[in-house]
Length: 399
Image (tube, rainbow, N blue to C red; front, side, top):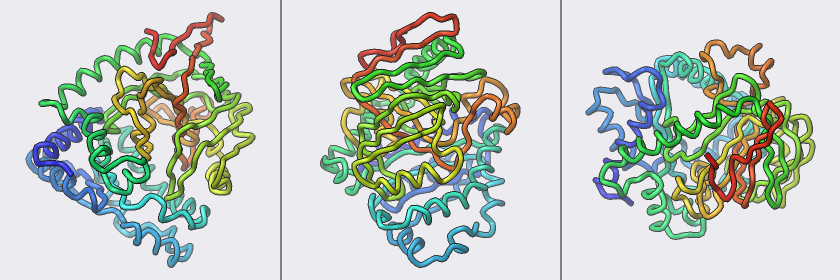
């Protein structure tokens, strides 16, 4: 899909993002996992080549194909679905970084699989995620991910493959002579906005739109996070709110894709943090299973806003990485059900113990599911001193 120059630019952006995402600089011979779908092989090859040029050691790993995934869930028993492959823990304990190239050949091949099986396998992988989180908190690991255009994505989005590829190029600044320069400029603007949002303190955000009437308390010892380098592209500003104080109604307006299932609009009702009612047009059983897979799955782990001035993403992309960063004419917001982000804690990562997480209302779950709303909205901050301040309207932050 892309010529050599575009692939080289893309790889440079990914390595820069990986470096920004890590608190300590990379060293020679650091181990970098390169996960890729087979349709993204061209970019994965370019990434590995660049890593060698930088003195790193790439560890390329191709993800399962759609058939491999389908066979896993239809032919493997529970023991095989929950077994960690020998050597995986050791590998993850030595990794210094991870770059993932998402290029799906199918989006709905797991639609007929029992949700319980998918959840079972996902929960079994939690030890590996915990290792990465611990190493990231230590400053020894960082990760980033990106997307490569495929026919399956374009078909689901309702646009041509060429149009899809152009959306990715524009969103990642790959049409610019020096894409990393463009990302540095954007990062400076985001840092200014997060500093302003942090100054609002432990406020409650009240969101109103045509189908949203939601209150989310930010919580104590929080900080807002902007461009971290973890995702390319990323235009969201987000925080992990106090999971115990979400109330009202929220509705996603963009379809979402999870474990091969396509789900349209999802309406959620919250009371004292927990989802008390959920309705969908279809796949109701799958959604309910996701929310019931563990204690934290029915609570909010992320609250995010996207400024339309920053994001060039203007169409439905059938992928959360892009759809959660939708700019368009009205900007967007999203909440994520499930796990909180520890990087929104405003102190040293090692101080965010399990006891502290519970005290401060940081959610814990194997789930992290972003649900996007693109309606015109107003966000008012109810400040600790009792005053009200409109912080977002017309798709823009009101700094």
